[in-house]
Image (tube, rainbow, N blue to C red):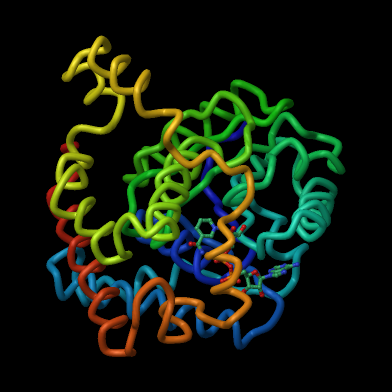
Length: 313
Ligand SMILES: NC(=O)c1ccc[n+]([C@@H]2O[C@H](COP(=O)([O-])OP(=O)(O)OC[C@H]3O[C@@H](n4cnc5c(N)ncnc54)[C@H](O)[C@@H]3O)[C@@H](O)[C@H]2O)c1
């Protein structure tokens, strides 16, 4: 496989624009492809605005913004997008048929040694690759939103992914300042979404059963064990308190925890009634637009602080 010089991102939406920004900020020429020019211009506008907020917070400078943007070429043409690519990240909408179609095209139009990565959140890498011929160069690279601020990228091995593809993807992501981790088996939700949604299922169940309201559930995390999580995640924490205590707690409590294989009826009802959270103003809690905006800003400020401190976790 060649050294990686040219990066292509397919899909310029929420994730695709941020992923392009990561590579262009580190000096890579990037080709960003989407279905029409309006989507591509708004992606560049979003990148400019992200970089300006970062510069306001002393991460990069305002004077660098235009040179980052100048490294991003946009196109609506798949052949043009792929012709020079050494590494492609697919970030189109989360739909198996669409992703299989895009990968079939990428597989037939690219050089056979181009690495093809998918940013799917939960779909099997092996299924996405199943309609392609050269499957050993197809890999999952699961970035988190916003991808230019959250360090983690799960590098997921599909059933046919080669060691060389895993290693190249891992090294590239590390070289652009991300924190890649290897996921050795292609299971739904990979690692981080399995953990995240195990917690969300229990949180929703606690609200549904009237044990505590939604704000209280969040307070228990934010003012309690959530404070430890960035420095002491579950496996290290289990060792710190002792596997004997962990065993004793699980022996007593696991039978009482939520284990439904289906989404909660409360959650289903909320969706049916149009209570969709920030976007409708009401979810588990009330979200007038100023309060929702304040929450987004608080998250951004926190993540900018984490980036400034560097990878010391
Ligand atoms: N939004 C998140 O928080 C998040 C986090 C991690 C991973 N992901 C995953 O990243 C992927 C993209 O998600 P998103 O939130 O950026 O979606 P999005 O809807 O914001 O963007 C998807 C983009 O893909 C484009 N697209 C659709 N078909 C295309 C095609 N054939 N060729 C080129 N472009 C095409 C759309 O026009 C759109 O601009 C999904 O697989 C999603 O599951 C999302």
